Image (cartoon, rainbow, N blue to C red; front, side, top):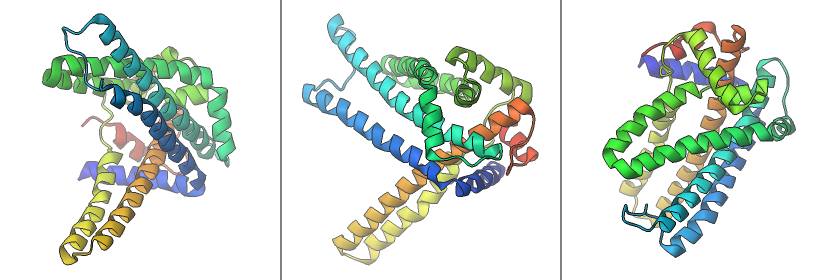
Length: 279
């Protein structure tokens, strides 16, 4: 409950920032559309070829090379879309948290100006994600445990990379090192884990499921169920957009606090300290 309460406070502070710049929701929306287009462009040829399963150990080398080359390209494209538009949100959030008034153009301009840095970080992040996927494919359940542990460590060390790319404009490897240094300087060896936006948003999805269940029980009308299900889908999309924007705003606030040791406007020092304390 303490974790939920602290997350709610962090979300409230991030929400106040988002209310001043509602146009920030444009970035996760475009990101989601582009991700769907990337997914469709890869899914169609893979479905037609029937090669959606990892090749067996006994498979020819050429088959393995083709499969994993295509998989890496898919990871790279998906990561690039997410990182590019997340960088745009971070750029706008940094302007707002410093007292400015950002626009969508500011975000797109900042992300475009840092395109080489974003491409570099995309390559690093996609490679790590690709390696995690290979481990899962080859070692199954044991691989999932290994990837879970490695993924947690990777999430911690890379937590401030995108704000560093955007604000400091340093390279991906330097940003990764600086992200680790800032976290250690500000919170020591403590974990990022006393907040969970995903947990709060999961709770917010429950009423939608309950509404569909109630409609299904009380009425036999397929049309009514279809309408409610459609509204639920729209509600989920809205939640996903807000969650993405709020997380980027919070990430930026954490970065500014860790770098300057000053609390960004709209946040409280205890709130930020609690977010990063050891579980």
